[in-house]
Image (tube, rainbow over all chains, first blue to last red; front, side, top):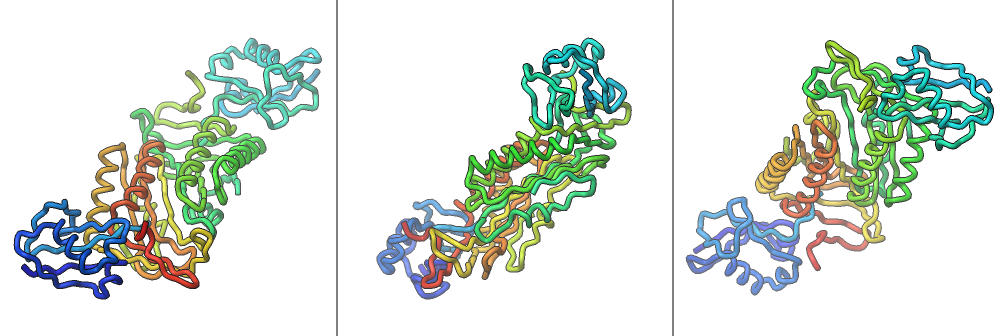
Length: 80
Length: 80
Length: 136
Length: 136
């Protein structure tokens, strides 16, 4: 399964691009995506938090991902 | 002792004037002024509260009044 | 800055007065004339103030707030005289490096203003006039 | 009204949006760029947002506030892009018939915005750049 993962803020800088095309075994969930990404970019594991938004909503760890999903990494927010 | 008592808000309407020239025995205090005024204008006694300011400060009941004092009746405030 | 004025209140003036590069937060309270009180239609309002003491009581309140919280600045502008529906009666602006303190201070000033500052409000309804809070 | 904008924020617009004859109280929070963070001089700020989700998360927060308190209206304007010292980063205005609710709602919106809305702030100091809150 090919996923497009969009990146903002510090995750964009860590990965060095605004979007990451990512290959995962089918029926992977949010938790396994995070694990894979942290393995490949250890800097992501040093963040205060790293959430994942799927189709514009914060996603629970066990949400199973689909190729059509809009997947976005959400590092610690700091608006306001 | 002659006192000028200034009136605002509802006290002005109850008394029917903005200033009241008032005669009190010397060494009268705030408490006795209030008592006299409520006797003469019973409507004043029906207010939620009736404080007295002397020289621009809320005055304690036992403050002794002098002819030179600026004395103001303070009915319940409702600014804001 | 503490001001009593019979002219329309300029909110931006109160904000500008407290804004500074050291203050990351400004909290503003704007009190306006509502069209209803206890289900009755308000026609207009009249504010009367014992000016000198109103100013000195407001100064006390502002000083108390500044002593209590790390506030940069507070401004208070209160209208007097005749007001119509939606007119601004009072504006309070408080600035601080962090927001919590600005919220606390701004609310403290308006709460205490309503308790201690010698300003009186008369509400005019269609069929009567009432000095607010005068009677139990 | 919920707006993300790369242009300077107009505070009066946020206030006008929530003002009405039924609302006697408007509470406004204005967040500006401070010149110092932890004793270090800030040169500028950059705000980046995941726009679509930032708007939908702000809508959730506003709806939650409106459910929780008798609020008339809430407006939120958040700036994105490059900001200088004293520029306005965010304005939140809440109106209600009585003031307590407007204070509670306005503070709730800014507190929750800072926790859940996908907007990221990079602070530029003289010698480094930091994504705020990114690291423990």
